[in-house]
Structures are given as C-alpha cells and as structure tokens.
Amino acid sequence: MLVPAPRSPLSGTGAVGVGFRPELAADLLSAPGAVDFVEVVAEACFASPAARREASAIARIWPVVPHGVKLSLGSASGIDMDRARRLGALCRELSAPVVSEHVAFVRGGGREIGHLTALPYTLEAARAVAKNVAAARRALPDIPLLLENAACTLRFPGDALGEGDFYAEVVARTGCDLLLDVGNVYANAVNAGVDPGELLGSYPLERVAMVHIAGGAVEHGFYFDTHAHPVPAPVFALLAQVVARTGPLPILLERDGDFPPFAALAAEIATARAIARSAPSRPTLTRPTLAGPTPAEPTLAPIRPGLSASCATLLQNSHDASPSGASALTEVQARVAELLTSPVDPPPEAVAPFDAEDVARSRAILQRKRVDDALPLLPRLSSHREAAARLGVRCVEASPRAPSLTAVADALRIAAAAVDDARLAPEAIVDRLLLRARFVGPSGDGSVRPRLLPFIRRERLPGGRVVWAIKGIGSSAEVRLIEPRR
Image (cartoon, rainbow, N blue to C red; front, side):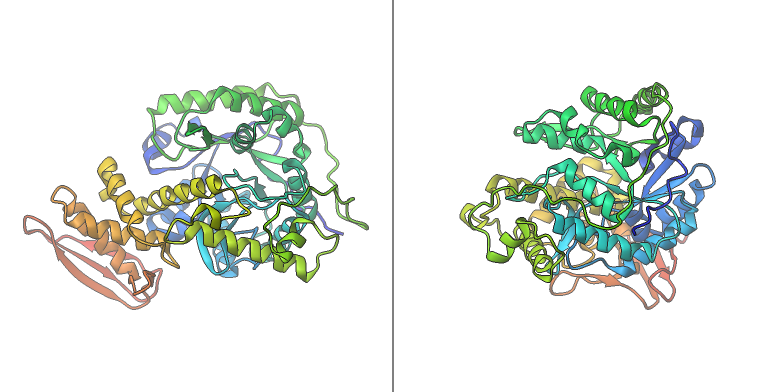
C-alpha cells in the first residue's frame, strides 16, 4: 500500500505569498505583513552562497518554501541523488514547511536541456515519476513534497491520457499532493484550443495543496507563461474556480522579470487574498491510496507514424511497468533532448514525429532561458539590465550549450564579452573574478566545474583601482572580495 505523504502545514489556509527575488527584497522587508510566506528557487541557493544566506535570514521572518526546478522527477534514467540530498539539506536549513518540484524532465540521453520539459501523458511516464519521487523522498526531510504541473511547449505524439488524467495518475502513484499552477493550466488550454475551465475540471482538484498564479503574454499566436506580466483576469477566474471546489489554499504569486512598482504586485496579492477568503471552508477529503489492482487502463489514442518500435510501445501504454516501456521513455527523452539542444537548428524533416513549429519554439525558449539563468550570476553587470540582456542573447546564440553548469559557463562568456565594452567593463571584471574564484573553466567542450582548491587573484579595473578575490579550500568556501584603499 502506498501511504500518502503528510499534508502541508500551509494546507487549508488562505495564506498568500510571493517568490522572493532581489528586486522585491526592499519592499518586502519594509512591509513583511504584505505576504504570509515566500518561495525561493532551490537552484539559486545552490549556485550562490549569498542567495542561500539570504534565504536563511528571511526564514526568520516568513515560512520559506524551497522550489526545485532541476531535480528532473520525470527522467526515465532517474534523478541525481546528490542534487536530492542538497535539496533535503536546504529544506532542513530553512525549516521548510513544504518543498515543491515539477512533473517534468530537464535531462535526457546524458544531455542537459536546461529547462522544464513536459512529459508525455502516459502511464509509463507516471511510473517514472513515482519511482523518482520514492528515491527523492529518501533524501528529503519528513515534510510534504508537492508536485507541480508543467506548461507544454512541445506536444508528444500519441498521448494516451488526458492532461488531468495524467496528473491524477501521478498523485495516486506517488502519494504526493499537487502544486497546481493555474497559469500553466491556462496556457496549455489556450494553446490547445480548449476551454480552460474544462481542462481545470479534469484535474484531481481534491489533491491540490497549493496554487501558483502568474502572468503571461501571447507571442506569434502562442501564449507563454512568462512570469513577467500581470496576472490576467482568466487566471484569477481559474483560481476562484479552484478554491470554490477545494476551500482556502495557500496561493503564491510568481514574478520573475519586468518588475512593476510594488504597489501593482500588492494589488495582485490583495486580489488573490480576497479570492482565498471568499472560498468555503475546506471539507475533510478522503485521500485515495494505491492498494490492490491499479486503476483501469485508459482507452488508447492512435499512434502517429514515424515512431520507432520502442517509442510506439511507450505511447501505447503497456499495462505493466516492463523494461521495454522504461527503455522507450528513455529513448523518447534522449531524442527530445537532442532536438532541443543541438547547436544547429534541425531541419523540419528531421524532427518527425514531433511538430517542427513546436521544436523551433521550444529551442527559442531555451535560448532565452539560458540568458535568464546566467544573468543572476552577474549581479553587478545585471545593473545594466537592457545592455546585459542584449549581450547575453548574442553570447548564447554564438555558443553551444555547455554539458554541465551551463548557467555558470554562459555567465563567464557574457562577462568576458562585457569586459570589452567600456560602459560594462568595471562591473564585468568583478563579476568574472568572483566566478573564477568558485569555478574552473571553461574547458575545451565549454564545461566548468567547481573549484576545490584555494584561490587568490587580483584584477585591475579601469581607472587603476585593484580588487582581490580570496577563497579557501572546498567548493563551498566563502569568497571574499577585497578592495584596498588607494
């Protein structure tokens, strides 16, 4: 019998929070009562000791929810247990009430995709998630693990389950509740040409423990959940539909870019809080467990031509968790990773059975994501926001994706290019020095690795000022920046 995980301490409340970002820090710290909890991106804490110290500090003010984006719970090849252990250590350090991750994969066939890629809606994919969740739980503290639904930019041919049915399988097989991103539900519905309310109603709403809301925008006829625009009215309407069914839930507003004056975000927070408070009291729900026979298998969708025999086996959803099914999922994910990360755009005839427009769109998103991931590692250079972003786009377009620590490798490339720009050079030199103190590379294939040995080096800035960076032994040793007085 699969025993469900404990419910989140935030469940059954109308708490409203926001993703903690440097651009929001001053406003949040000056008015801590504006939110009831905050969320931090776990990988940001892994990449930046300063971000981790900041997360530990704000945990004294609000409950802090670590939100993972690269554990790759949907990978057929399994998860990186070292990453899971690091996530568990962060949860303990923050005394986190709950932790969340995505039902998605970010690596396949030994390739890092660099962004959340939705899974095929199949039983074999749900089984892979369940296996990975079981492994991850061994490294996590005894707190709820919430699983977030993903936005789809690439559709798999021959999905045999509906979107909501797939997530019902996931929660049944893992015992985890959902972190329901209604912005992603809205995006998937709009892009598939279906009614958002009907799609939402197909989800197992009785298993929702937290909700994400965010804004988006339409580009070239496709709705993107950007996290950089105001939350649209239809997303708030979906939020109201959820809490009308579930009762009050913790709600988190995601905003990652193009930050408006805080008053605008405070108004969105107030709207979400009003919706939460208008919800009926949440009834006591009977949470299903897996005991005895598995649920009846669904009617299968037709298979598109062009798939290998093993891929066809996957999409036909064999009734047992056979090795052939797992290997087929591995093959599919490796193929997707290759299509999305190859240095040269694949010709349309080479992407079959996937849709060429879907592949091109997903590749463009990944390029943008590389810049978004790299710039936070260059905090001084990023003060020149527009110039740094333009330079970042040029750098990632001109270089293949590094096989590991891609954001660091891209940040080093961007900093190196910025050193040649007189306007950006002072900030770029310092950012690059700090990165070099913590990482070695890039090597011939573009990869970097953590620096284990001590480091001491100086750089001379334009105008003659000198700065030193000093680090002790170990990859997590603190880096000190020293600027001697002249």
